[in-house]
Length: 216
Image 1 (cartoon, rainbow, N blue to C red):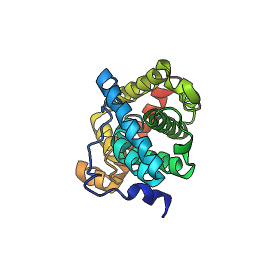
Image 2: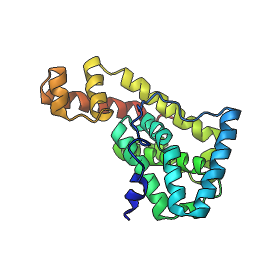
Image 3: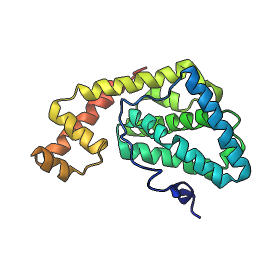
Image 4: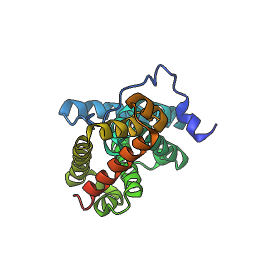
């Protein structure tokens, strides 16, 4: 069975669409949530002991939604966020990471998605040096409060930059990047020409790129 299919074996009901929003909370860090997370980790590890496919499917069902919400806060695109999370799961399966993860699966996956999102942003905005350094951080440092705070600050800055865009520019950008709509569809819905939509999105990317340069 192809790698991707290992995780696409979830029923449509189990994968019922959930709204992804850049304002979604990343993780619940209350004591009760941490206790529940430990219980979940126990059952997931037991599933892996029975069969890797069973463990991976349970892991996917349990964390997929939260990871997508996590990623979309950085990349401002529902489709890209879902693609990044799928890539993380596929590598997890292909590399048999379930055999080597000593920390919790939750921490491993959230760290991997953060790094994947930052790698995407680094490619999108090539001279974001501070993000590049963050994306290359490995191991236990990824769990340190300062590391998490840095991503929260970047997420907050992205939100500020998007909200500061001119109204039509912001609409076009979010429709393209978050809703995944094509330029022609956006042009029709906003009563604009395709070239105007292209100009709006180009302006949005330029302003976001400039606003994130050297940002820590």
